Each structure stands twice: as structure tokens, then as C-alpha cells.
Amino acid sequence: MASKLLFILTFINISLFFPFSTFAQSPKEAVLALKKLQARVETGVSYRDYSPAVSEAKFAVKLYLDSPESKDEPDLSTSLLKTIEHYQIANDLWGEKFSGRKPSDFVTPRVKQAVFKIYPDAPDLGVATQYSHLLSFIWGKASLELNTANSLLSKTEAKAENAKLQLEALNKENEAFKKELGTLKIENSKLKEENEALKAEVKTLQSNPRSSIKKKK
Image (cartoon, rainbow, N blue to C red):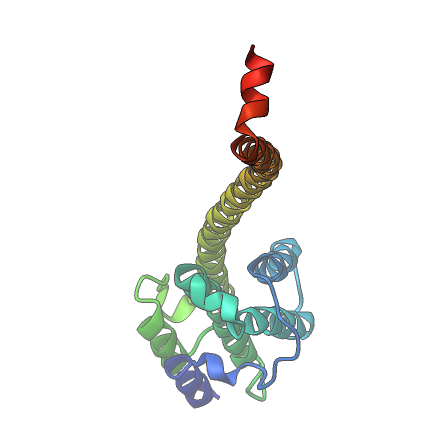
């Protein structure tokens, strides 16, 4: 029913995602799950197959958003959330087509109003507006947001790689410092031995000064 779509589109909430999370998910895996969904849409998918595909991608995104890592990348997390919401809205809209006794290709005024509350720039063809028009528009929004998420992911991965290289450089410097410290310890130990030998010699000379004088003569 149109009222159902109106409610869903107005009160979409990520908390409606799967209420459990068992495994950590990387942002890359979340993006790949969305790309897989995008590919299915672009190659042609039936509503029967689309709904499970959305649920699968939604679950992957939910796992990442529930991870501590997502808090470190708020822009990426927001972009991933927006992407899956576009796909979910399309799913709800598509379902409205089959909600009546006689499925219609044309969007009812109430459904159109609900869609336009979220997408003011959606195409309006009057009574001739079809579900396919709005679905294509929403999927286009999803693709654009996914491109943003992918770009943010690339920056995140580059930052992580840079941090890794810096850590490796620090580890190398630390190893070099350890080796240098080891060499200094050995040299210090030798100096201590030489110092002890000099002390012993001075002590000998002090205890037998005449012997030292005779040796000089």
C-alpha cells in the first residue's frame, strides 16, 4: 500500500537492519558488497532476486558500521549508509508496484509524494510517471554515492598504507639503534677493562715506587 511506502520512506532508519552482528567487516568488503549489488542492477535483475540482494549488501554494510573501525572513518561510514539506503528505498518502491490486486506500471499520487519528499529532483511525468523512471533515478543516486564511498575508501587505504610504511621505517631505525647500542655497549665494556688494567698498573706502581725508578734507569 502507498501508506506503507510513505511510512518507510519517511522513517528509514539503519536500526532496521539485521539486529545482530557476529563478525567484523572491513570497509573494503562493504564496498565490494555494494558493487556486487550495483552490478546486478545494471545487468538486469528481477524484483524477486533484487530484494535478497539488497538484504545481503545491507548485512555487509551493517557489519562494518557496527565495528569500531567505522568510528574512525565517519565520512566513509555515512557514504556507505546513504548508498544502501538508496537501494533499500528502491526496494520498497518496487514492492509497491505489486502491492495491489492489479500491479500497475504507473506510480500513484501518494507514492509519488512519498518519493518526492526524499528526492525533490526526481523526474515527474505526471500521471505517466512509471515505477521504472523512479527506480532508475534512485539507482543512479545509489551509484553516485557508491562512487563517493569508493573514493573515500581509496583515501583510507592510502592513509593506512602510508602509516604502515612509516611504521616499517621506524622499526628499521629502531633495529639500527639497537645494533648501534649493542656496539656501544661492547666498546664501553672494553673501555672498562682497559680502565681496570690502568688502575691495577697504577696501584702496582704506587706500592713499589723504587722498582719503577730502577726500570727507568
